[in-house]
Length: 451
Image (tube, rainbow, N blue to C red; front, side, top):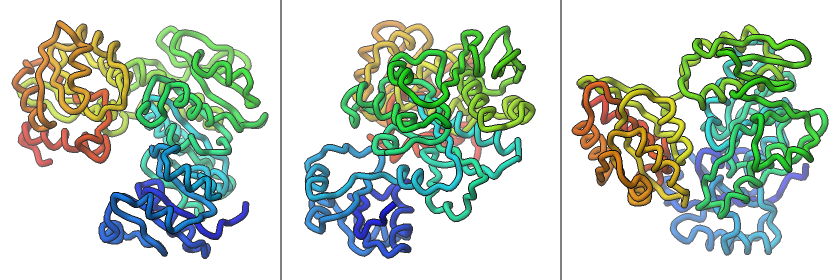
């Protein structure tokens, strides 16, 4: 791969930060562009040959061109006027994920989907670590950039990466092992259409060859035509009964089948993760881990001990007989639908946030059936309220602190108050983690605990 002489790094979030030292160490001239002030970025330990900051950072970056390569932050619209002008001037659009895939000496497992990516990625990493036969590195969209760890990764390791549609949009290679968990409309504010979103997700296997493998649900209609043309080996998981080869749920047992008779992985009742979505996540993770060579015993042990990751149906506290659950990861309606399915008993749901131009009709019907009360906030509050129609009590709140207070006033002993917004967090928070942490702190204050 030819080393560029001059690169522009646009957006200095978690993914793009490692690009600055990576290129600087190789003598590449780096121009960094970000909406935030230069002083704030330097305080965070970032450095670059040239800075383009403030509201007009993209126009300023254009004036400093041309560039050999432009690395865009994930989630950035790729066809804005300044980006088109950079390409017209000869720059190649790239992303940190594609650079890492081109350099990584070890086989990579990539995991994507509209929901369940982090849980499944974490499960796979734990299963491979429990197997213990090879070093394991876990990162990507899960919040851990792997580019700085290239020097530690040997060819005999496994690298497990959570990959978002934003990261996949610009890749020109696919991982050795790929898992596409599910597809539902998401991020249409950036992708523009469900078709474009699906096309981005499908790039996780678009460049695979005959020695690679692909893990999918028993049927995933939006990509089945692309799967039919895939060159890699296709394996399936299903919570609706047996598959010819893969993992499946039947008779209350999670099974693995390769060529002959199936082998039991674990009873569904033994899983600490609750809800149908997490059963599917467990099946997908088990299949990926087995294809990567993990022993059956290692997979089964992790299935029976894994309790989940933060912000995903995470119990926070019980106050006056009311359970409080943090599901801030629910940044789209399908995630909140999964929460409504997984949780038992009467619910008070806190929902709403940044508008990604998604449809809330199905969620509204589910809230009408499952929720005793709904507290709404943020840009999507009115859309969700209209979708609910009649049924539960619906209240508005200006912010999360008020929403928790209103939810507490509506909840009765035996109820569950769940933060499951069905919306992104960007109207009030930097990310869903920050929103979830604020919810935790508010609930713990109610319970008289330290934040």
